[in-house]
Image 1 (cartoon, rainbow, N blue to C red):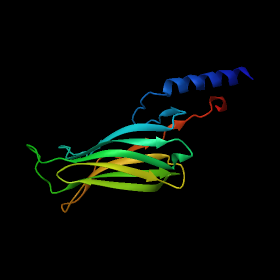
Image 2 (cartoon, rainbow, N blue to C red; image 1 turned 180 degrees about the vertical axis):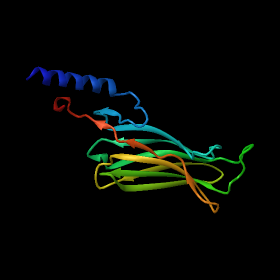
Image 3 (cartoon, helix red, strand yellow; image 1 turned 60 degrees about the vertical axis):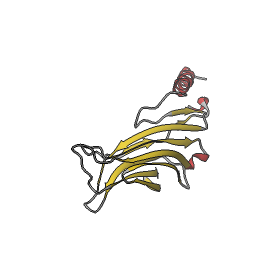
Length: 164
Protein backbone atom coordinates (compact mmCIF):
# COMPACT_ATOMS: atom_id res chain seq x y z
CA UNK A 1 0.00 0.00 0.00
CA UNK A 2 1.44 3.37 -0.94
CA UNK A 3 2.04 6.13 1.59
CA UNK A 4 -0.57 8.33 -0.09
CA UNK A 5 -3.15 5.52 0.04
CA UNK A 6 -2.42 4.99 3.78
CA UNK A 7 -2.72 8.71 4.51
CA UNK A 8 -5.93 8.94 2.47
CA UNK A 9 -7.47 6.01 4.34
CA UNK A 10 -6.51 7.47 7.74
CA UNK A 11 -7.91 10.89 6.77
CA UNK A 12 -11.16 9.30 5.60
CA UNK A 13 -11.46 7.37 8.86
CA UNK A 14 -10.83 10.56 10.85
CA UNK A 15 -13.42 12.45 8.83
CA UNK A 16 -15.97 9.68 9.46
CA UNK A 17 -15.18 9.68 13.19
CA UNK A 18 -15.60 13.45 13.39
CA UNK A 19 -18.69 13.53 11.14
CA UNK A 20 -20.75 10.87 12.90
CA UNK A 21 -22.99 12.45 15.49
CA UNK A 22 -22.28 16.01 14.45
CA UNK A 23 -24.86 18.37 13.02
CA UNK A 24 -24.42 19.44 9.41
CA UNK A 25 -24.24 23.11 8.60
CA UNK A 26 -27.23 24.37 6.63
CA UNK A 27 -26.69 23.75 2.95
CA UNK A 28 -23.80 21.29 3.37
CA UNK A 29 -24.10 17.53 3.16
CA UNK A 30 -23.88 15.59 6.41
CA UNK A 31 -21.28 12.88 6.69
CA UNK A 32 -23.24 9.87 7.82
CA UNK A 33 -20.75 7.08 8.47
CA UNK A 34 -22.68 3.82 8.61
CA UNK A 35 -25.82 5.12 10.32
CA UNK A 36 -29.04 3.88 8.77
CA UNK A 37 -30.95 7.15 9.16
CA UNK A 38 -29.67 10.72 9.22
CA UNK A 39 -31.95 13.50 10.52
CA UNK A 40 -31.52 17.01 9.13
CA UNK A 41 -33.39 20.01 10.56
CA UNK A 42 -34.74 22.82 8.44
CA UNK A 43 -36.59 26.11 8.86
CA UNK A 44 -37.92 28.52 6.28
CA UNK A 45 -40.04 31.66 6.13
CA UNK A 46 -42.03 33.65 3.60
CA UNK A 47 -39.42 36.39 3.32
CA UNK A 48 -41.86 39.22 4.04
CA UNK A 49 -41.29 41.89 6.68
CA UNK A 50 -43.95 40.41 8.97
CA UNK A 51 -42.87 36.76 8.56
CA UNK A 52 -46.50 35.76 8.16
CA UNK A 53 -45.56 32.28 6.91
CA UNK A 54 -42.98 29.92 8.38
CA UNK A 55 -42.13 26.25 8.81
CA UNK A 56 -39.79 24.10 10.87
CA UNK A 57 -39.14 20.43 10.52
CA UNK A 58 -36.84 17.49 10.12
CA UNK A 59 -35.94 15.42 7.08
CA UNK A 60 -34.85 11.83 7.73
CA UNK A 61 -32.51 10.53 5.04
CA UNK A 62 -32.19 6.75 4.64
CA UNK A 63 -28.95 5.00 3.73
CA UNK A 64 -28.83 3.35 0.28
CA UNK A 65 -30.40 1.23 -1.05
CA UNK A 66 -33.39 2.52 0.97
CA UNK A 67 -32.26 6.06 0.03
CA UNK A 68 -35.02 6.40 -2.48
CA UNK A 69 -37.21 7.84 0.30
CA UNK A 70 -36.88 10.81 2.62
CA UNK A 71 -39.32 10.90 5.53
CA UNK A 72 -39.99 13.85 7.73
CA UNK A 73 -42.11 16.01 9.95
CA UNK A 74 -42.97 19.66 9.60
CA UNK A 75 -45.00 22.32 11.37
CA UNK A 76 -46.38 24.96 9.02
CA UNK A 77 -47.41 28.28 10.60
CA UNK A 78 -49.67 30.90 9.11
CA UNK A 79 -49.52 33.69 11.65
CA UNK A 80 -52.50 35.63 12.71
CA UNK A 81 -52.34 39.38 12.11
CA UNK A 82 -50.16 41.26 14.58
CA UNK A 83 -49.66 44.99 15.26
CA UNK A 84 -48.53 46.60 12.01
CA UNK A 85 -49.21 43.40 10.06
CA UNK A 86 -52.84 42.88 9.14
CA UNK A 87 -54.53 39.87 7.60
CA UNK A 88 -53.52 39.79 3.95
CA UNK A 89 -56.06 37.12 2.99
CA UNK A 90 -53.32 34.63 2.07
CA UNK A 91 -52.48 31.20 3.49
CA UNK A 92 -49.05 29.61 3.95
CA UNK A 93 -47.76 26.74 1.85
CA UNK A 94 -44.62 24.68 2.50
CA UNK A 95 -43.35 23.11 -0.73
CA UNK A 96 -40.89 20.21 -0.35
CA UNK A 97 -39.37 18.99 -3.62
CA UNK A 98 -37.20 15.87 -3.87
CA UNK A 99 -34.65 16.07 -6.69
CA UNK A 100 -32.41 13.54 -8.41
CA UNK A 101 -30.25 14.06 -11.47
CA UNK A 102 -31.22 17.74 -11.54
CA UNK A 103 -34.93 16.91 -11.93
CA UNK A 104 -37.89 17.02 -9.54
CA UNK A 105 -38.90 13.43 -8.69
CA UNK A 106 -41.51 14.02 -5.96
CA UNK A 107 -43.19 16.90 -4.17
CA UNK A 108 -45.31 17.50 -1.07
CA UNK A 109 -47.36 20.66 -0.52
CA UNK A 110 -48.35 21.30 3.11
CA UNK A 111 -50.69 24.17 4.04
CA UNK A 112 -51.84 26.21 7.04
CA UNK A 113 -54.36 29.03 7.27
CA UNK A 114 -54.54 31.32 10.32
CA UNK A 115 -52.82 28.85 12.65
CA UNK A 116 -50.37 25.94 12.78
CA UNK A 117 -50.55 22.44 11.34
CA UNK A 118 -48.22 19.53 12.02
CA UNK A 119 -47.51 17.02 9.25
CA UNK A 120 -45.67 13.77 8.55
CA UNK A 121 -44.55 13.30 4.96
CA UNK A 122 -42.62 10.96 2.67
CA UNK A 123 -40.82 11.94 -0.51
CA UNK A 124 -39.90 9.01 -2.74
CA UNK A 125 -38.28 8.37 -6.10
CA UNK A 126 -37.33 5.48 -8.37
CA UNK A 127 -33.67 6.53 -7.84
CA UNK A 128 -31.56 7.88 -4.96
CA UNK A 129 -32.85 11.30 -3.80
CA UNK A 130 -29.95 13.76 -4.16
CA UNK A 131 -31.47 16.83 -2.49
CA UNK A 132 -34.65 18.32 -1.09
CA UNK A 133 -35.65 21.91 -1.88
CA UNK A 134 -37.67 23.63 0.88
CA UNK A 135 -39.68 26.78 0.20
CA UNK A 136 -42.44 28.76 1.95
CA UNK A 137 -45.02 30.58 -0.16
CA UNK A 138 -48.03 32.73 0.67
CA UNK A 139 -51.00 32.25 -1.68
CA UNK A 140 -54.36 33.94 -1.97
CA UNK A 141 -56.76 35.92 -4.17
CA UNK A 142 -54.55 39.02 -3.91
CA UNK A 143 -51.62 37.10 -5.45
CA UNK A 144 -48.74 34.92 -4.30
CA UNK A 145 -45.14 35.33 -3.26
CA UNK A 146 -42.43 33.04 -1.88
CA UNK A 147 -39.44 33.23 0.40
CA UNK A 148 -36.01 32.05 -0.70
CA UNK A 149 -35.69 28.38 -1.62
CA UNK A 150 -33.28 26.30 0.46
CA UNK A 151 -31.54 23.27 -1.01
CA UNK A 152 -30.70 20.53 1.48
CA UNK A 153 -28.29 17.99 -0.03
CA UNK A 154 -28.44 14.31 0.87
CA UNK A 155 -25.84 13.19 3.41
CA UNK A 156 -22.72 11.46 2.19
CA UNK A 157 -22.90 7.83 3.28
CA UNK A 158 -19.46 6.28 3.83
CA UNK A 159 -19.87 2.54 4.26
CA UNK A 160 -16.27 1.48 3.62
CA UNK A 161 -13.43 3.85 4.61
CA UNK A 162 -10.88 1.71 2.74
CA UNK A 163 -12.66 2.55 -0.53
CA UNK A 164 -11.77 6.26 -0.18
